[in-house]
Image (tube, rainbow, N blue to C red):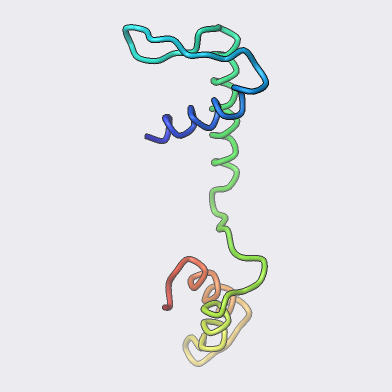
Length: 99
């Protein structure tokens, strides 16, 4: 499924700029030209590298949401309020927890 999504994204990027077309083969759809096949492999490698680079990161809003602010206000852990506790509570709220 993810490969199909990547292939569609690649096609959207390539279709206007290059003479890119697909053909039916006994193994399914494939790109007609070797250069397009190679470009798709490079695209996949770049996307895989990007995904690997982003491991351990989460995407959060530029401005904290109400849920994040409420989580920060209510984050007393073991009787302590620390920057680390606030940060963790806000990240959890950004992920959809603490609702």
